[in-house]
Image 1 (spheres, helix red, strand yellow):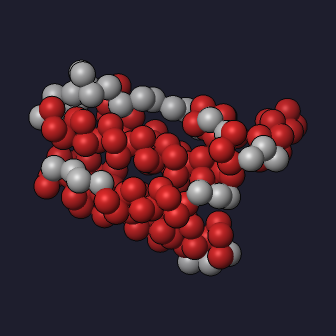
Image 2 (cartoon, one colour):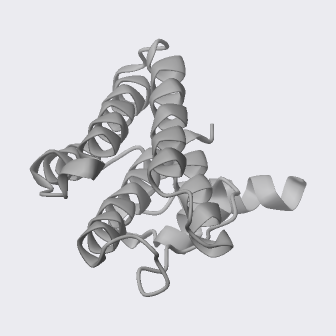
Length: 151
């Protein structure tokens, strides 16, 4: 436990641009399961869209761990052009990142339950939309959103 705390402090001391996604997950610590769009049972457009959304979730995790870089991630989340079926998931993830930014940057304690609730809703929506996905992609749905929710 002490070694993990030391690792986290060392990683947090680095500039945001220098922290990789893998280092951010290690700092939390949380498992990272990468979404495999080639194995997805959903449409190719939806799989590509989720891959782009999850790349932004990874960047939001780095922003949260380093406490910097939320605004560019939010701008890209808002501008992301996804298939219609994913629009609600995109809105929920965006709301969660806004709430996390409010907590991390502004110290707004209400951001914690709001972010968590939105991420749980996004996970439930993904599971409802894509019940036929294989175990790796179902794990990825959980891991991306849970890691973003991890405090």
